[in-house]
Image (cartoon, rainbow, N blue to C red):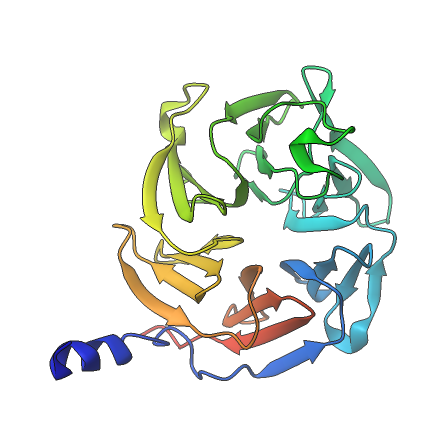
Length: 282
């Protein structure tokens, strides 16, 4: 490798965050996931084995039991949606604390183990359903489906199957114009995209980029895709080209943008969560 190429490779990293080191590190959990910024609460996240949703401040319990929640999201009205990894359903928690089941079956059969979710502006909920929370996985006694699906829950509550061809669909995100759905397949070491604008079901998967063991994913204001992976948090532009990587102290599982000024980036990583400051937009 030439010196010039090596120099380019080394200066390629960590340009989208203000500092390489996190501004906050909180540890002592079991396995953190589902980071979410909520204006009234601040940062919250799931701890799957602990069956708890925490607020980042002082390990404060926000919800327990949580159905072993994994991914979290906000609906159009600001209620919290939970991908209940253990209870095998998508649920909604209202501001008064009441919880309702949004969906738990496809064609009469229970989901595997809902993992992550994203919400469209019209209220549609998209989520992935790998078997990570099922004892014995797809071959276990509790499995009712014979595939790992990607689904849409319409505003009317209908459950539509988008695709069942990925091996282990995991993180999920929508492009800014909401015309492209991105899904991480951990087992295939790749991110796939689906052209939601065509609205043809099932949708064909199109490989977007390769990355080692991708998990949670998020889209930023510039339509860059941030991917938690065994490499760290790898950032891809709209063309699927790597433009950045954030090295995290531990293997990251998910990430989210937020903060009072929208300049924070929270990464969940094994028993810890790491908060980074984003660079100011020019």
